Length: 417
Ligand SMILES: *Cc1c(COP(=O)(O)O)cnc(C)c1O
Ligand SMILES: [Zn+2]
Image (cartoon, rainbow, N blue to C red; front, top):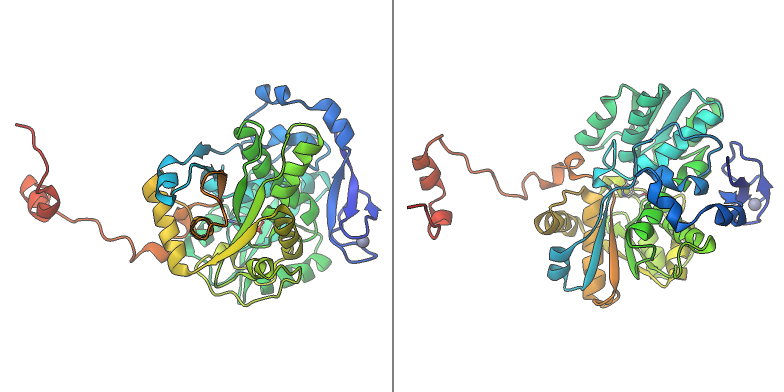
């Protein structure tokens, strides 16, 4: 049972069958999936969700597959919680975290897009999957391909964090480290996709892949009690997650599950790679490519594929953007850990640091609901923290050594009598 009508050009509206196409043959516009929303509305109600599995497939009617899901059956429906201690520190009243740092199985929101992409790739008859990645996507494609028994090639820039490389290699894909930036990797994959009959999840089957990101937005709305927050701060690389969170709220509104979809969206980027943030702050729809130089490698896309649409989605929502320095990113990672017990990667540091600046500037008001999108796990990006966290206190295994080493700290401590 599928509610997909077909594929549709985002620019000229031309319709295409549900096959492998990612740019319009007439106007070169980008392609997106179109659904029969009236039929979905007749089928779906809030009550239906109570009995559904706690995975991203609970929103199956709004995902672009034909049959039953065959990948990522336990992905999605990650924790969403009120962040009281962080709210106090930032001086805001209603703050939430959507936490994909613990996404199953590869600890980033890329499990969502890959669950959808691989299910669809199998339906389309592919036996080999591939991707151009800044790290997390390679991890997710490698893992999900292993479980699905698909052949797998992942392409990454050669300078990635060791945690991201190991977290792909463990699944035994072919990992190709390209001497260049992500933008070089992406261009190479576009060329390779014309030559090899493989499903490059974020290139030739991108329209299906990108739909998986909507589930992050669906879950925020459902977990908030079927409402949209007033403000959402979202990290941006290609800009796809931003556009799909906007689409998710619009769709829930369209099918009658959400009353007020008017959340303001904010793009968070690193100062060392902020082409989308720059366009938004200039209120321009021209996203000028940059050469990335930042510790937030998962967001280091200098020429973002969905930059134009992300910029439009943010400006239409009445939101804004902020770019943050590498030091601010590290401080953001530390602050989230110290206040909420969540160890996020550099991208999460970008989100928190950008949110902090937007609140301090008065752009995000202190008394309205705010959601922070935490999209990846800190165990994968330990390099920037190594000399920034202090050291473990090393002692001999005796009380005497413990007390002499920690004399200062224990000075006021009570002991049992
Ligand atoms: C890929 C990625 C993003 C951004 O994704 P886009 O949809 O390309 O903008 C954000 N956070 C993390 C951790 C990522 O890996
Ligand atoms: Zn077109």
